[in-house]
Length: 477
Ligand SMILES: Nc1ncnc2c1ncn2[C@@H]1O[C@H](COP(=O)(O)OP(=O)(O)OP(=O)(O)O)[C@@H](O)[C@H]1O
Ligand SMILES: [Mg+2]
Image (cartoon, rainbow, N blue to C red; front, side):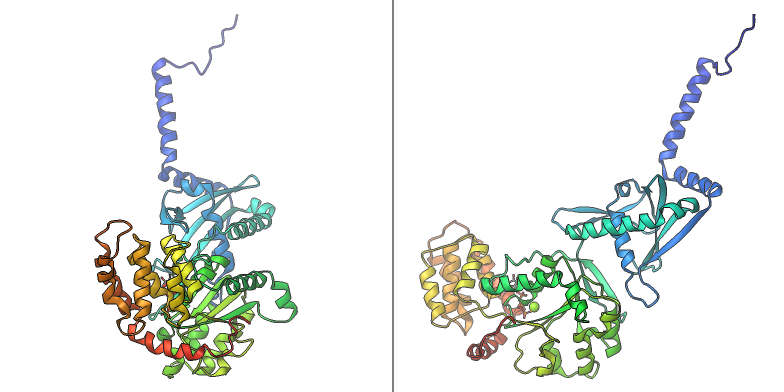
């Protein structure tokens, strides 16, 4: 008889040692150093190809694929497994998002293949440019590269359409001409929070919606798919807040151009070239800049910029917004149709805007003091929404006191506008809710208000805007 001795027969001690070895091995594999070692070994046995997706292409234009890859990678569940990821705040409040740190790799799986993405910084500056490197086996490349890239496009587009895209606010830097610095755009302003004539608001919204759908239409006409808006009106009437509301409505990034940081026409051109589609390009206070007549940027430089001539070659889907306190002294050439498509006037507060503000700031739809407020408005008194908003915020614990402080400010429209009276008025009034802090807060707010909205300029602007009121109003055309 033949006895077969099993070769796997181990003594209990050897079995325990082997189990321990396996467990420790598995644990070590989970740590980064073993994974790296494993990847090196894989590299020996497989022939890989490396594909680079740079942030900027040869003409230093933004590479749109880079942004898509970035959106795609940040949506991958494997982001959580990466050895080192950055935790950053997201678009919504309390949102925390993982973002791939420089020099880190994450894995992705597609149609049975494993792919690796490496985030390679090319600039030591954290806000500088970078590359994504895709590592793919040569055998897989032939089979899956094309559908994989299509998949990335589709996922990124879906993320953008669902509004999950993180909006960015980009500002030009005075040190590096033609370069943008980016921060997350989290301004909470929406069309709902802007006090504005409802018809006008709806017209702007439908104008923007039809612009979004009009790609084919613009192309058929041989025009760049862009739309330009002029927002004009006195300080504190909501122009900047409106730009933020537009960005949130369209889900567009905001490129905010500070002309004072630009040295020449060519820098301005370069900045425009470095903007990306799906963005609002804003120049604030253009009237003031044109009045200064600086030698750094010529009128034709600004006109070319407004026409967006350069954008037609490579990118579109932009909205341009220019803000002004008044367009009275601006050369009409800057505002001709085609150059500026839509003019929107931002007036000082009227009774209807006051009611919108009272609703959003104080939660009050109606109040026994409203008829008095209405009468004062009818007599021609007015303040900017910013001023009224500040008075309401400062007295938010007592709607009655807030409305009385607005009444006082409207009645003393002009000198002092009742600022000094706010505290005194509050003492005289019956308090809706006892809160002793409000007077101090009011005074503090008023000081801030004076500084922020250059109090004395208001008076001048108001005079000029009341003379404007007789002009035929064509807020949206
Ligand atoms: N129409 C409005 N509806 C709601 N809030 C407004 C409105 N106008 C101004 N505000 C409030 O007042 C503040 C200042 O407004 P904003 O900065 O948008 O004014 P602006 O017109 O851009 O002023 P400036 O010409 O000085 O830049 C913001 O906090 C905003 O919330
Ligand atoms: Mg502004």
